[in-house]
Length: 415
Image 1: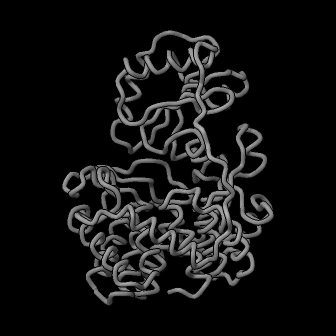
Image 2: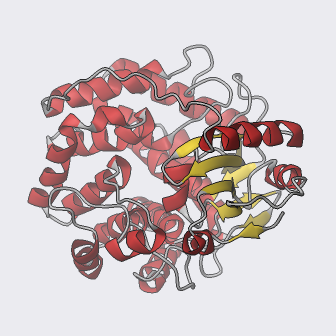
Image 3: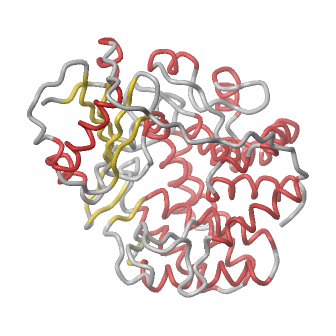
């Protein structure tokens, strides 16, 4: 078997696709690809496709569980099934044969029964309280952090909880930050813990997660006045700076840069470094932020390439530049290419048509965009986005809802 490009498969109108999603930094991706390549037979009406999920988040959101490595079986109508994590060849082959049999009429594809319901728009305060409850439901009261194994520290969720102002939310934040610092910090933060007790960590340090953690540590310092958090924000910033040349990669694994520079990742770095400058007035941080502000352009998700650009890129870029009193050209581009009348689509219309995908209004990128609009004084447009999701936010994962909760809190004068 051999892999073909996504666009080539679309042109061929192949009715069934096996799509392998990977990233350069993920543990087990190379091993999983070797298992998939053991399928030697060339199948009629079937294409094998490999996609770098970091470079094509539009496809990863639509067709993968966003856990890597993963394999998705896609018909001309929908995702039929798939795998994630390391799965041996025999199991992949078995699932592939079962799926092909289903698609070709050898069985019946069951659609789960859904109970009709109509979502009702709630008040902003009800939404904030519900999001808080949802986030706290995933908190591990024994060891801190969110979920079990793997365990995450989720900087954006922690920032949302900091805005709540109640003692319990603050203790959740402190407990999680203290555990993440003790177990996962080694110049920068490892991406997650493989074990519930934090002791078995990933070997990957994601640049954007570290930048996000800087923002959270700064906010924790402002709330608690504990310089312990500020010290780690500064040291994490200093660690990140050594990898910009001039742009920053996706990840660091065993001291090596991994992944092409992405616009959203570098925008997050710019915002974090600029916030360190605002707090410390250290010109080193200002110089890096200014350089990124000059060099980050509205062109492509993958910096330096002629590819698509997504709302997530522009939302983080606008939040970075908006904090510096800039970014009107970015907002103009967003309004022209992504505006959907109330909230914003995740891709341009031209890109969606060329890739034969739908356009989604995603809560996380829209919430980040609205936060940027607030910093620029565009309150009416930010309010319009917040209103749109008041009867839809429950459809999204709790960590995406957290960005929306932070938006609602900021719009309505909470912290």
